[in-house]
Length: 425
Ligand SMILES: Cc1cc2nc3c(=O)[nH]c(=O)nc-3n(C[C@H](O)[C@H](O)[C@H](O)COP(=O)(O)OP(=O)(O)OC[C@H]3O[C@@H](n4cnc5c(N)ncnc54)[C@H](O)[C@@H]3O)c2cc1C
Image (cartoon, rainbow, N blue to C red; front, side, top):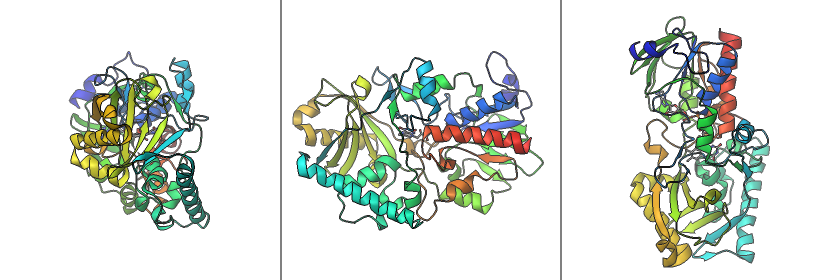
């Protein structure tokens, strides 16, 4: 293939790359990067292809909008005790620090204190217990069906969309129970930049978009906008929403169980509206979290993230999806009205700049991260099953123990690579 053949085997980068790869890895998010590192460690020749012009996928730090690092996607290092990025961050000089677990609540036009605040935490405890009871019975149903319908919008937001990017009606109880419970951390300088450093040695063919995987013969032929790559196996790490859209076709078609699993793992809606505020209008410690309910919607705020002057104003779930569909201007307007609600006109006056980032409007992702549909918690395991012993799906979607996270995705990339080394080649 013209573009790839010309560059395949070019030295000067770490990793094992060859003119005739044994494995093609599709996507250079953390899953593809992790798969490549494992394949390289095993001396397996492979090519990583990436449709965009950068690595990191849904972990991306940009500085051009605000002049300081801004995490457009993932921002938290979850499961700090076991997350391999934590050790890397220490070695790379981006020493991570522990996230505070402090919340400030605003609802119905006021900051909640005393009994008002306790009522919300009691509601959250009740809802958690109701879902956990269903989990104990093995009931894979919509979380909304077991949570008291009178639960406040703020409590529902915190147990559903803010963690899972999906509202309680779209969340499987069993999948909900897989949420991370370890220590949350933040690296210095942004999580996207940490991932970019972590993956810097991986050789990647940029601007190379997979369009079809032909597995009718012995191995696989991966068709791309730059030509066709032949290999013995392929690791597919693109988001399930991309697969469900048909952007990559398969010949022959995928088994029904795999197709079904892809559709049972849609990406939810979770987007940052990033606010650059003058001074300290909230008068809250940096990295304090605020849960907001008012002016027709809910949001989670991370105040003055890492002292950067940026406040992440996050919308999610059904409300976030509806707002995001209205466009960036509507998203920013909602954040502005919420500022007015919380801080009055001084709060609005402190807003220097705002920018909304909408993952579902980007065809290379189609959303934020997966939540299994009610009744379909088994879909993650189903998607893990190799197809024809040569197509392996991997990513946050196939992680059963740490779904929707970077560390879950990293483990899955390594798992797929090991599986190819052990069972395919
Ligand atoms: C707003 C937001 C906040 C988040 N917050 C956190 C957080 O705080 N902590 C956390 O742990 N996780 C968080 N996540 C989830 C986390 O970002 C993902 O779980 C993780 O990045 C998924 O990595 P991946 O490699 O599996 O997929 P991706 O990052 O989606 O990588 C897939 C890659 O494939 C490429 N691609 C797509 N189509 C093609 C094609 N046809 N051909 C070639 N390449 C293609 C894409 O460009 C992309 O680079 C967040 C995500 C979002 C969007």
